[in-house]
Length: 372
Image (cartoon, rainbow, N blue to C red; front, side, top):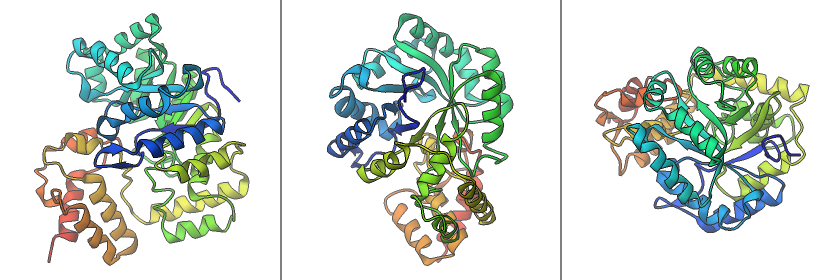
């Protein structure tokens, strides 16, 4: 089924987590993933200039746009904060994005990761006005934002720019009532303004799939149904006004699983909803750090610390108190700076969509893992 924006199905392909070696995307694997996705009746792809160290757009060109007619896919790209300093930088960046992706227009172009801090830069550089000019020129079909902040900030942006057509939100069952992410409240703002929603982080960077605790897995296993990821993605897709749910698929197996249950999508039933609610209660009791591994923090860290990887070891220690947490910490920091290398500049915290106290967490990691 195709919606008014040309999107087929409620599953979108997020192109920021594909399998790669030495910083290069495995193009053979990605081609297989793209083929399976499209052959299963889906067509929405999402990328950004900074994804996979700049390789995502190139992979899109090599595996999607050069192999399929333009009408076979819907492609979203974004204007990211790190790629412009002044208004004069915006159009050249946009033109280069089109070239890198191998297309003459984007179906959706989003102002990337908007929050109360960077929004002022976008306004000062007239980024929104430039995007609206691209819309007038036919270089983009639809204009929107991706968003990481509180509901009041989203309301302000949508009031300032009623031309915004869609909003990409972090939305999953664990964040729905989270005071920092405010998924429910942001969703309600979108509904009030009549803006359709594109969902990102439905499995919270793997936290609601492969990284669930044993207790949480046991609750979902009782359903004797699909994968752990399936409950999270179907949960998000079941909300009214959701256009599609992005899954950052890493390999063919993940694509096969996702298209299997989303091809004939059904929202969660009452039994599944109850199980998900119990999982939320369990996860909140585990006192884990709600990091999604988006890596916006690492992009601005002057020391080059692998912050998401270190946070994952903190979560492992908090939930299991296992020796493996320290083992993985040594692996993650074997050829990279350790947590103790943090200079407490705070740049990471300003970039973090989850508003995490990263400097405190680095101190915690150093205390947990660096003492002999």
